[in-house]
Length: 146
Picture 1: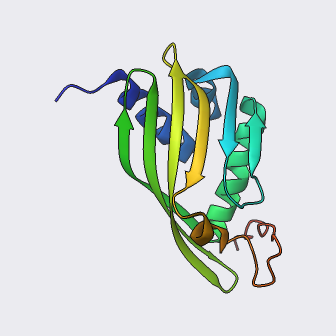
Picture 2: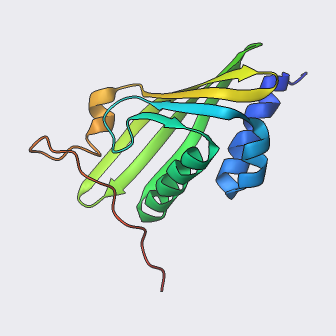
Picture 3: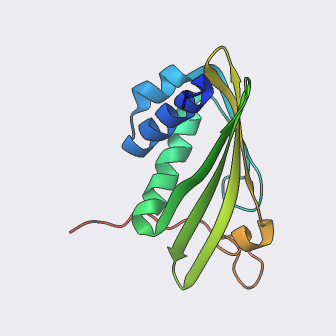
């Protein structure tokens, strides 16, 4: 099977993100990259530029240490887009949530220009961030290792 160049690009990006390889991520992203975060979460909105996106990923990573785990279930690509279906399992406090997300990357010149992440079931995904009173909660600080 011949790998599509954008499939390889996404694979390298996911691999770099999982290793915390900021240098490789910067090389794979356009200088003016924007990440659009949809749904109810502490980060909803637009995150602009590599520095802010790397900070966002670090915050997500700190939550991962506290109980958020994400895995890529499927990747689909075309000449100018890549889409990933991801499954997140989270345990924060007394809340346990399983939710699927669609992540769409716009690719220009073999670099990721724009990313949009959308919960497949927004109500289900919001259960992690919105308490029973309907108030948005903030993520816990990273767990201290002993």
